[in-house]
Image (cartoon, rainbow, N blue to C red; front, side, top):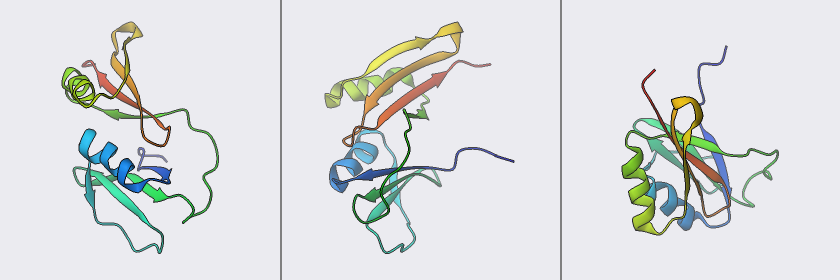
Length: 121
């Protein structure tokens, strides 16, 4: 039934800082978004709008608890170098069992974002 994860939605009270984090730091691109009547952005990886940003107070209140979400990265060392150059703190580790590497960062809204590099199967 489920084919994959379509997108994550992040609520923010600082649209410019959140955009800068996901676009300028992580490399997503801002793209087309339906006219929902609320302020926000759709951020794309390639042709897929994988992160939706909604201005807090312009939509229903956020509910539930998600510990983090993860982006797959092609070059783990380059991703960490980018975090270091931007002064963004991270916690990096090998994934046990030789499955790859992971690093955790925090967006301007307190959302934990994982950067994951997986070894070939």
